[in-house]
Length: 190
Image (cartoon, rainbow, N blue to C red):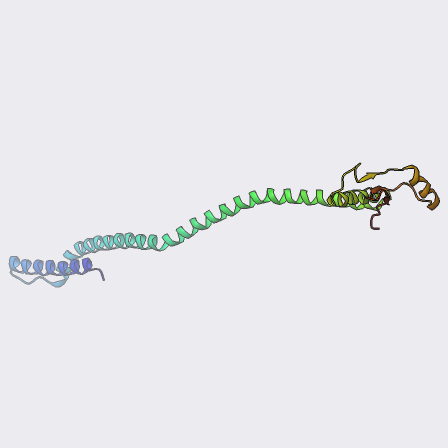
């Protein structure tokens, strides 16, 4: 119970006693309790009403403060959650562009892969690929064009040798130190 309410009730009782004593002294005859209660009732109701209003105001203020203190952690958590959601949205938007670009690059790579696969299925493309690989091997061996090897060369002696065997001109002709030549025809794996 509110201490203010207790003080008011005690104060009303003291006042009622004083009024009772004064009324007895003035009239000489005793005043009935009903007369005192009738006179004090409006005052007591007014005092109790004021006490209840003050008590309610204090309670409302205290409840508001307590409620605010209870809600502050939730408000902070909601703000943090809102910030995290905004960060995730921004990250998603920036990554979406990257994923789209990677998807396009994968499609381009798949298209190029199909193109290379189809090219290697044709005999002309395989022949060119084989020649290119053989050229790389010869260069890695330290040989120089027109010094130690020639490409697609057909000479007098070579034509005679090739006519007898029935094959065409070789891709490379290597010049050996003893003056002889070695014809090499590249083949691509099938």
